[in-house]
Length: 259
Image 1: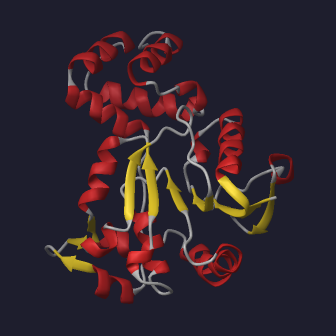
Image 2: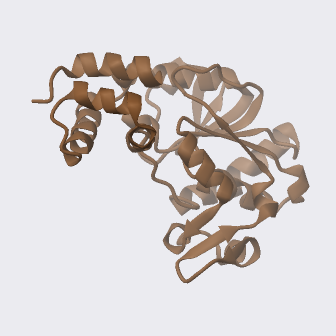
């Protein structure tokens, strides 16, 4: 036994301001216990003391619990719906200067995918996307823009040819033209104030890790961040139950419009 997980959650909140009570406990505790035992540490208390004094362990912990899994055009059939149905609708409602937020953007594949998709319809200098994440380390990775070939497996070849430079046999770097369209910022979906006035918010494959109470809080905040008629794009396992009670209506599968 590593000790009291309740006390550990309190200590982590004091140290990082990350509220582990908002995450599904069984999944998160299993991940954390695995990380701790991997290092041969025998108690939560000892681990917290290590996090307080060692920046490398602290950064590893933050990166580990924020579960960063991403790729370009993840679930490509949904990106097809975004291109064929959602983007034309948004252009019709709000014009071509869309205000877009990629929330919990991880290492940048999602916001960069959005830029490349929009580049089909407008010059790059007209595209600006806000991208946020709780993990400062992944934001720094996103700003560098280097990716393994396997993360590009669903990206249209035209985008790869046009917007990536080969670094070596396994790695590509996205062009500065695409990177300059994205503004990266730190943001905690559970703690920080939400920006407002968006036409489209993309937050995918993140809310599955949160409790129902935390999800409701986040959905309510997203609703307030969207313009009326704006769209929230969620992940393939994140159908919004009781969307109407949250002020949304289902537009297409995984796309919800603010009522």
